[in-house]
Image 1 (cartoon, rainbow, N blue to C red):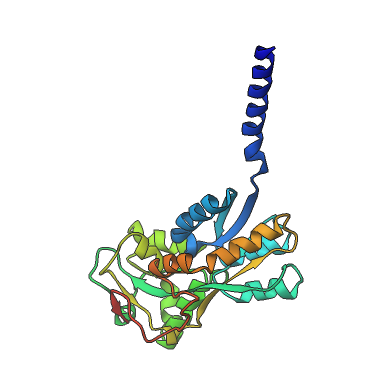
Image 2 (cartoon, helix red, strand yellow):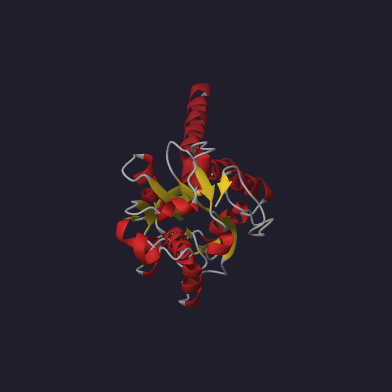
Length: 262
């Protein structure tokens, strides 16, 4: 009898242990490539706090937007701009409204130093890496900066366009391209301190990064919780440390990071 009861209890305990993870939910998040350096820590914190799982997909904002418009099964979209989330809202594909989670920063980077200046862009035949302006907000910011300098028409002939800001970074990191416009967050991750200059924010449209919850999500409550989590002080401090302006202090301009401002 005792053996029977013990066997039953062990069986029930095993059932509860096995069924526990089945109650955890999976959140699918589409993330703009520039935000990759900071997502690992934030997702780890969210999973620990909620017991749920987050699956991340990275690409340029334009690429992810096109996927979402055509029905890609994501729960949350973290854009590198406010334009695409706004378009999704207008199309009725969003539950609620767009929420800003960070403000991006553009830098000009030369691997191995010395720190470049914007005057270096005037050198004839310069090969320059940028993200594709057609799909990546950081690419648009780079193009706008070159237009302000009156250099886009001449420099564009030698521009190497990456599918995303991550690929533009890779072109410079591997030495295939000597210089490029990248996100400050990418260099913060690699602890680069003296090989770049921060581009003045009045030279390009603000890189306001918005997040939206997709209306077709089967995890609406958890998806909204994730967006709220991004905007909490602890995560905002992490985002700021990663090279962004945080939402809790969204002023753009008038501040300098390490490195020489262009």
